[in-house]
Image (cartoon, rainbow, N blue to C red; front, top):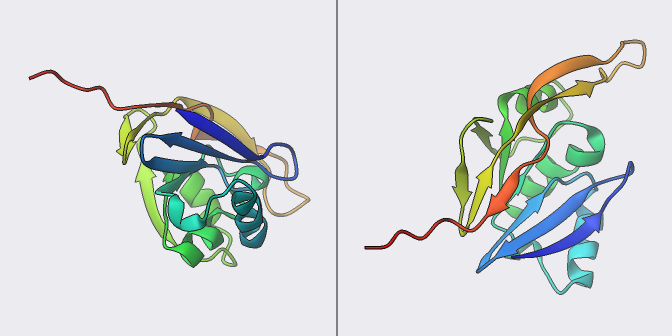
Length: 151
């Protein structure tokens, strides 16, 4: 399994995870052009990705995800709570969204994703609102190769 950090910090997060012939981007808190530029610096293209998996709805993890996914025809995996928070913003583009159960493992190509459910604090888009707790974010998923069964 290989990892490549495209960004890490309050201005944006994105991590490429690779196992066998599957690459997934974990979070996408940067604009589409910036993600494309950072992928290219690592010899990758958006077409090399199988999907985007969002850990939660904070802007530094999710702001560019739907636009990037729509632009490149990628599915995006997220919890219902994250989808609900992103869908509330009417300026967010539509994309191929897959709502995941934060209690169930799912596979994207050659990767298994084992979500860990947690609570995150989400501030409303309005600066006058106080943060509210959102249950069901996937704050620290475990990614692994699928188990091989013997015959």
